[in-house]
Image (cartoon, rainbow, N blue to C red; front, top):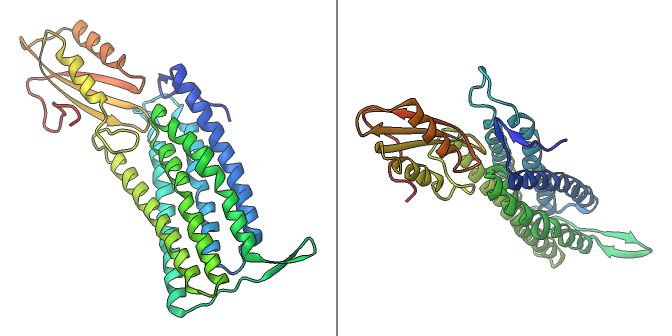
Length: 327
């Protein structure tokens, strides 16, 4: 899969082009790494509910990478009459799909864990023959989980976390955030297995419940963020924590023009790029085409993420427009 040098009608600057190339590489690496861990865990999963839940979580963790790579195929397409804003929303749809899948499966796993605890199911972890020696399978489970966590926590998790703000990509950020939190799954699964080993049977089910609650939390958080973004909330930063500072820069640029009396902006986050409606009340009640074109170009030059700018001369700033910038 070739890495796009353009998304929509926006040519990516060198920094973003290189960041996107690295992000694609890390996503493919993650898929390969996770596929191997899924296969290895399958060999030692045994009757441990905690291990089985961790195994399913690994399978679910493939969804964000697949969604990201599929979305790249669409967001490179230019806007058309059929899709006047381009196909940037596909990235948000991928984010929503990943969140809903995590939420649905997490709820199912939580119910299964609670049911097992109520029923008092006692899991068993047997022994295996390895190099002529009889070994408790639990030690292999612990060893496998301790090794597989290295990738997400120390390598591709932090790497993608650094790339997400450069690309303003919320799906990539969610993927990185989930990867960095994988140590919790590992600790819970190890505690559950060791609990079975010392005769505390309920620790396995409790660990499975903790892991499933983590999946539910990831699913709820990502679903909520994706839905709100698709509903055209005020554009926010890549981590959705704050209003995007570009709104303030746009307002400052508009107010720097001597012919502008009042200014307001509506900034729509399309996925990785912004569509900006710039409302201006001119001092003398009139404005020239040259003035609006110049202002549009100035705003577009502020940030590579500005996909399109519409300058709207008006007699009153409409309700809902941002007139103050980020708090």
